[in-house]
Image 1 (cartoon, rainbow, N blue to C red):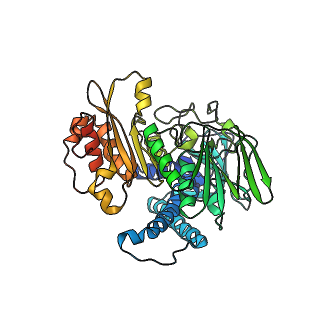
Image 2 (cartoon, one colour; image 1 turned 180 degrees about the horizontal axis):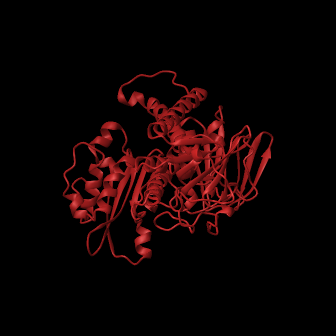
Image 3 (cartoon, rainbow, N blue to C red; image 1 turned 120 degrees about the vertical axis):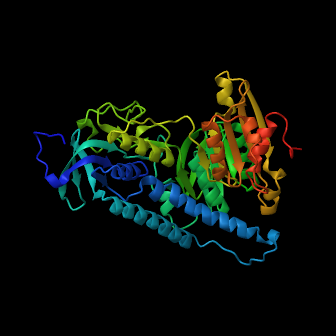
Length: 472
């Protein structure tokens, strides 16, 4: 290991790899490095699991599971099942969520123990490029040194200019998860994946929801056909949607929140949720003492090996500013760890799927139609409504569609976009198809079980060439 003349480090605190942050990038990187027989130390100031486990993916999916179950119970009569006096106990829903999160935390710590990974609970600060001071809450400090370092400090909710969470009337996507009481009404600023998932949660539990998006569509990063379908389904459920409008002012009035939009519309609700993006966590841990370069928005600049401007220091997850998704972070963590361990590999962002756990669910992979058009790519496209599937009718989940985009010359699949039941599971068939260079004809010719929702992918692929069997 390297030596640093300026700081003396106890031999017990010498490591092959130091990792800042135990989120989906950091803890996965730690496990992969330990699998490669490296001595690893992870420094985490809060709980292991990061935003994903503690304040994001897992707690929201726990709430969504409760919301979906309640929605199903309300439709039970349609299936010949009588359920009377079904009601929401939001405190119990929150308690279940906490149990789910705690189980995940225990699971990660168990894996750390299995692989002999050292977890230092406390804040971290670089003193030199490969020397970190860890400080516990009681003030105890420890100097740690490693041959390599991986920064995976994640991100945090972004405020909107002039508006910040007070956690009483105005919440962000972290603090809203800690509330014990359902408001009668809620306004959500930001119509991306997070805002739409919270719209689904609260609307399904009986809250009157307004959602505001600056751009022309909800989930504006997805294909317009998918966005339009979600908007239609939200409106059916009573969600009020305000698109292409800017928030000009937020006021607290008599125990309520008033939002004034750019066209003069005023929206009043009990509570307000800010869901307008994330900020990179690159401050407060001495990055200035490393020489690591950051971008204009504060993200750490990395190459396709996840290595920063300083050889031997890597970054993975949200803080690297690529695809800010938990599963991308985990893959980046593996790539960073393997390169730090001397195994050369590169991060491939060519087919990163996306999922939005609304009702109906969304799963997308590859190019959107507008992307292909902007790039001047000649395309063919096919689509299929899930209401034409026997399984959809049997399960009472007929809303949604599958859209397949293929290259007009080679027939290779460029993108697949799904909205409907189980879309986030179904999309991985498309991910493999795109990654392996399959054509629409290949997918059309792949025999699917019956009755399943995935038949919709086969039918949409067939529709690329006008051969869908069940398309009316």
